[in-house]
Length: 91
Image (tube, rainbow, N blue to C red; front, side):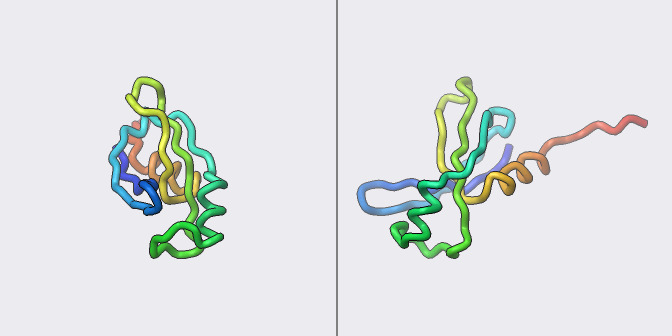
């Protein structure tokens, strides 16, 4: 399980939320160029650093929901996923 911060819009307001997802249900992580552009243009009214990146996280069909936008670059999210993966060492 990994904890991610998501961004969503309701009406004219943007919101940040924490979600915990099973990393084995993540099918794909790609850069969200749309949201990165909105942040650069100042259209996301949240106190975020201008260097923040957003990613679209696509979930497996069995997870129960389709996709969401997470705060962080695809590589940052993949690092979080790999950090939580336990590996067995052969000895």
